[in-house]
Length: 303
Image 1 (cartoon, rainbow, N blue to C red):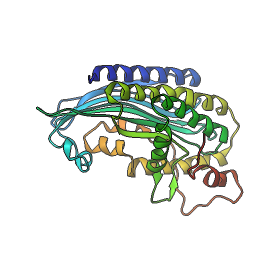
Image 2 (image 1 turned 60 degrees about the vertical axis):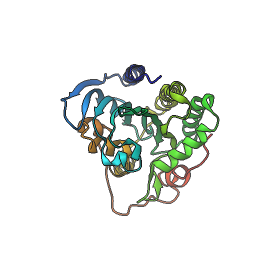
Image 3 (image 1 turned 90 degrees about the horizontal axis):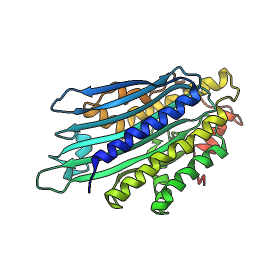
Image 4 (image 1 turned 180 degrees about the vertical axis):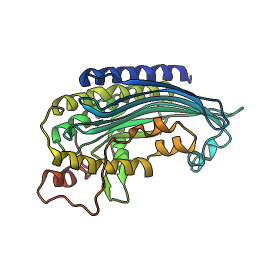
């Protein structure tokens, strides 16, 4: 049985748990922006955006919940899915991006979501999607291993084939084709997932969502007070530019939200507060910055 209200309740609770935990570490609460879209032909619905800016630990951290509905899907959603044409839909999810102040703390992204499309006299189309990925500026092998092991442990009860499949999907998805490089060290990513039936697929999505805090908080706690200087901040800003490029050029969630008439402030809260671009910049050979490109960005088995 498809229970969209149970999914909504879980997602709201997940947002609460994550923002409470991060606020306790930062010492500053998240501001809450509850919003509702007026009914239109394109999109309607509501959400709750939570944002922490200029904190002691987080330079910018956003955790958004949204639940939107529409009568027709944008072209980007139906181009490869003709069975969705002519269906009304609802989509709900929690999405977060944390941009810590300290360059030795990785940026992190996580998203879990549910999609449902209906049409009279037809079976509903539904799926779950989501995942999490880590974007370090100065890589630490133990952090990368911990993050990936936590993802694997969350997925293994639902099939030991899932982690390697979702890990590869993540490596391929979060890749800047025009740069020929990965955005970070990956994690797991899945979409259009319904293979286990609704209840078991929902349980798998919950396992991924529940794994986020155990995957990221130990890394945050161990790196947030590490000394750094202007050189590290400059490199952090430069690498954040890659994050902006990916989100605006390739990210399916960003494109779907903007094309379907979503709330722009909430969609673009993933942008870093400070980013930089330099013409044809190359790291000094043998430097800590060069190690990111040689030792961390190429896809590898972290488990």
